[in-house]
Length: 143
Image (tube, rainbow, N blue to C red; front, side):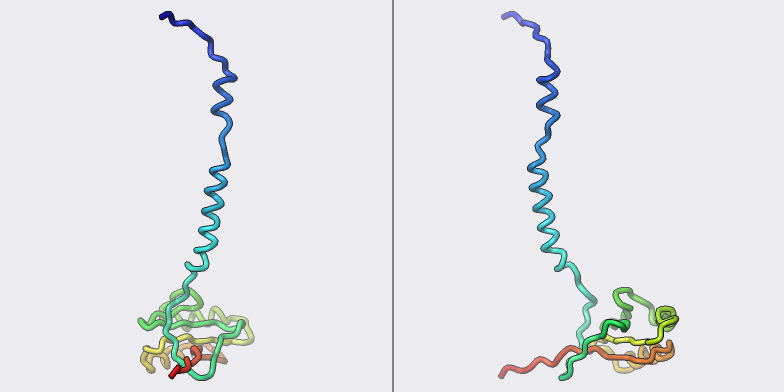
């Protein structure tokens, strides 16, 4: 068996490696995009608060600030946690230069009454004019 030398043509080698098939890449990216679009709304979770129930429904207005107090006594301004000792200062900074000072409090129903009154006192010291308490509507019993 004799080996015959054959020169390699650069066009033959270059054509098979230079063209990348992007169709599988596009398919994978579209599947990932659909997965993220479906799961993104599920990942948005608010602060877990067990609101007390009342017959009258109350929903916070758009112009006010929402203050959330969880059962373990963590205080959140909107979605940011704040120490209760810095609450008065933060509220003063937030409402500086604003005419209407409105705060809506979402407090867990298992909190002691004295703690909620303490937070209300801090809110009043900060100069807030209107304080609203947010509750969830009373569920009707099905007998």
